[in-house]
Image 1 (cartoon, helix red, strand yellow):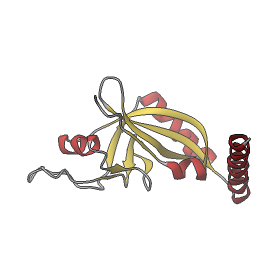
Image 2: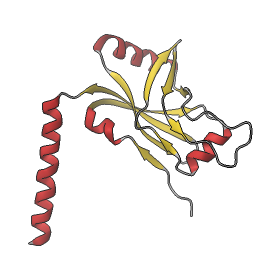
Image 3: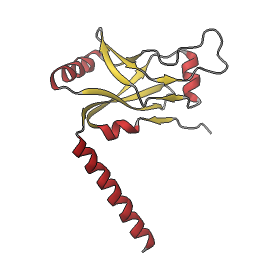
Length: 150
């Protein structure tokens, strides 16, 4: 049985309101893929940036592969994301004009066993929006307790 990999960026859901999401491929080395299969990766502090008409994932942490040799990878290098040119132009326009940002949300293997990352076009939440989310979360938790004890 193959273990399903699902690495999420929980802070992104709390700090950003997602407008649009899209699935991107990653350009990785062999040792990076092996390390990701072992769940030794984190996208918590990472972000996406457009450079030279290409989309890059910056500050994503992938632990060095333990059995890797001299050809092992750097843990926090910039990684190129694979996306169609038309989508990239739309994203670049949205990020440039409206002040939106590109946030990595989820890292996973798809059905064809390729590493994919879900990237969201998001708008930063204000403090009062975050408080509202926390309040709803607390109310839901209290409601589940009452229903469970009833």
